[in-house]
Image (cartoon, rainbow, N blue to C red; front, top):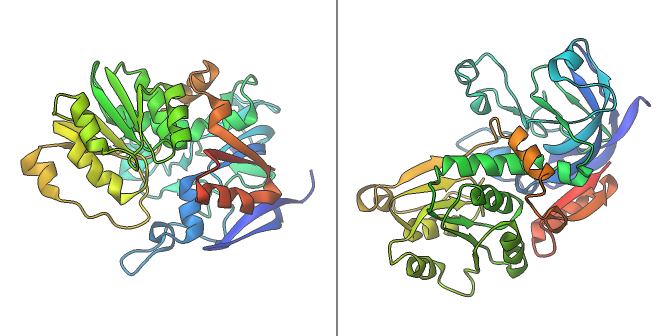
Length: 357
C-alpha cells in the first residue's frame, strides 16, 4: 500500500479537486477499507452548490468542515483492522463492509439515551474533519463507528445503495403506515424509490409515487407503486382526492427537496393524517401552519438518517426487492467525479450515480 492515494477534496462550494492524500491507517478499534463504490447523494450536490445548511449564513454556522473528502454512501473491502476491531464488528481482512453514515460521540444526551442518530456532535462521513468520506481509494471507519458486513453476492454499486435505502426505510417507519392506508411518496429519486419499496412491505391499499420525470415514475412502479403521477401533467391533489372519496391520503412522505412539494402535501393529506418531511431543502419553506393545526390536526414527523435500518436495507437488497439495475444508472471512475456531480445536478439522465475509485 502506497503512502498516498487519489481522493476528491472539497475545499469550498464548487471547488472540488482530485488530489493526492495520505492513506489512512487503523488505530485501536478502527477499520480501513479499500473503497469499492461510493454514491453521489443529493446532499453532496447541495453542499457542492453552497447550500446554507453546509456552509452557513448570517443565522448559523455551516456544517461542512472543509477541506474534507466527501462521500457517505459506500462499500469497501477490509484491508486493515486495528486492535479489537475484528472482534467488535465480526470483520476479517478481505470482508466487505459498510458503516452507518453517522459516528456517534457516545457522550451527549442523545447518545446516552440510545438516540444516536441525533448525536449532538454529529460526525457524518464526508462532512466533518473527524469522519473523512469515501471519495478516495481508501477510507477509515473510526473506533465508534457502526459497521456491518456485506454479502459477497451484492454487486458493489448495489451495496453502496445501503445508506440511502436505510434512510428511506426510516422515513417510512416514521409514517406509521397502517394496513390499507393510502400512501403518497413525493419524489422518485434514489430516496423516494427506496421509500416506495419499503412502504410496499407495509401493506397499503394504494401506493402513489409523484415525480416530474415519467421514466422515474416507471421505475417507481417497478419498486412497488400502484400509480405514478406527474405534477407537471395533472393536478395531483385533485387526483389523490378523487382516489380517496375526497378525503386525501393517509400518509404523505416528502422526498423531493422542493418547497412546492411541502404545500402540495398539506393540501393532499386527509385530516388527522401523517406528514413525513425527509428532504434537505435548498431554501426556506413558507407554508400556512393553520392547515397543520386548526384545519387538519396533522401529525408532522421529521426523518433523519437511518437508525437500526442497515441490516434491513442489506436484507432487502439480498432479496432483490428493488430493480437496482434501473436505480443505479451510472458508474464512473473517481476521476470523473465532476461529470457525476453534473449528472446529479441535471437529474434528467440519472437516478443514482456511483464512483469507483
